[in-house]
Length: 126
Image 1 (tube, rainbow, N blue to C red):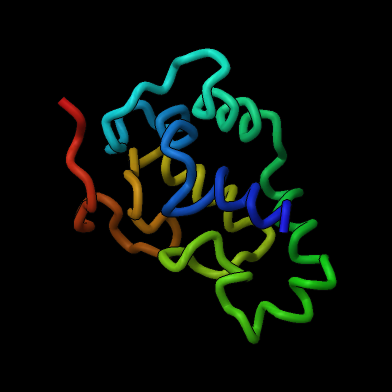
Image 2 (image 1 turned 60 degrees about the vertical axis):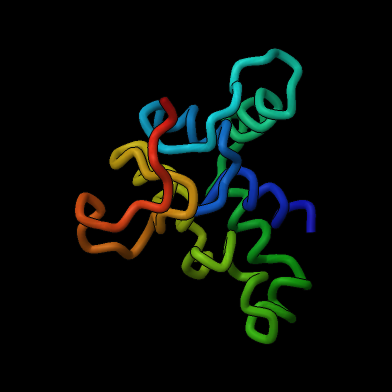
């Protein structure tokens, strides 16, 4: 499940808040500090920025557990309940859309026709 945990932190509607803020500085995230060196926030930025997220997603999809269980336990095939199925490029597309549209926590990041008109879950920090 290490690969799935990485997907959860670096991809999807419920990705790490600090990684989301790194991708899209104007996105709506909970009001917390993101820049403390050595904090768990900076470690998720370090982890996610050093990854080829599509390779991690593809590796997960090739595991025995994923292949045996993702149809029986659909959440194993998604980054979160708010996300679509992993495809091998889902996370890359999601992260690109977070950047492009400054999507916030719980905003769907793939499969939305008009990101500009979607209901947002979060309000920006003051």
